[in-house]
Image (tube, rainbow, N blue to C red; front, side, top):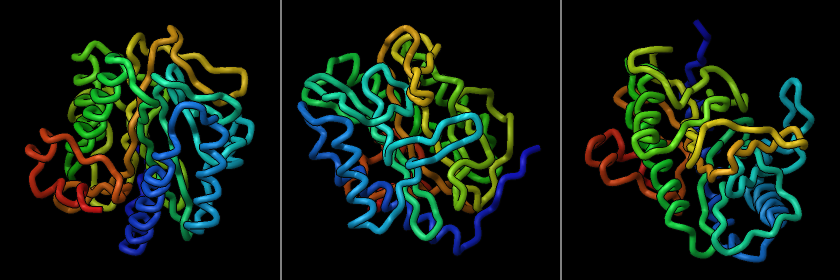
Length: 280
């Protein structure tokens, strides 16, 4: 059994602040995501905003897990068939592209980690549907979070929704515990069986961040050691929130004025437990 940290009241306050700041970076960068901009320029703008405006530290910059080279940029920009960890650079985004921006800031030692999908100009019907289904997958997973539930409940509902739509779930990457450490226990799988894996307890904080492919779930790693693409070159989408297990349900910590609201069916099903997730 893995050891999952239970956060103190002070930790939770710190994580609320970091989560809001992480979400506010995504709010800030939204108007800049348009045809003709490079992913490197998006990175530069986010980096300057974090450091100069927020007084936060970009967590990915020089992040170096065992076996990896240090990540060279402040954010991840995953375009079209990139599943995750796309490194910003000279790539110019164009009309019809879809891109995920994954932002993690550190404030007073605490990490706020979230990502959103963005359409560049007018997306294809396929891209729009994939992004919407992936968003619903994330929220369906979040809606299962409460004391006494299990991590397998989260993975199961995500896998069921994605596969029912004809899509596949990437299995090599998952959500993770987070706090003063960027990645800690538990691993939050986006597939699985209800009632399995660790039991959730109030005070746990972790991310829910399903990566859903339009085609098969198989992936390939690029030569830079970070960028992950779909093996069949199909589109991939991802959404991410950082979530606290509360005494009665959950609280989404990565919330800002521009955070997209939960899907209507989640609000209807969750009632009061979801109320905090919609407050800016």
